Length: 82
Image (cartoon, rainbow, N blue to C red):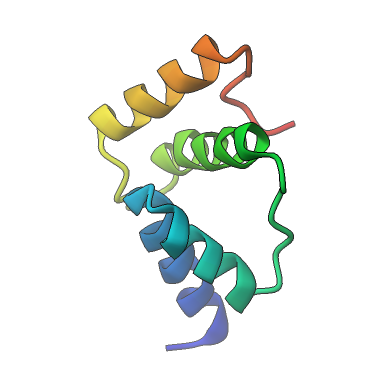
């Protein structure tokens, strides 16, 4: 598997899981900064989930999308990545 496919598979698996430790492992593997603020961390996670839902061959379910969308709205965030 090439590096791009591996990156995408790792990303999708980590964020679809909503498992904080798995997401942190993914971020460390790819040298992605992790917010120290817990709310900002989860806002970023839920934004990724919402945006992955609309990607081709997504593994994000409609229920997972709705849960993330609702979390973002309840906390005053937009589901879009600007």
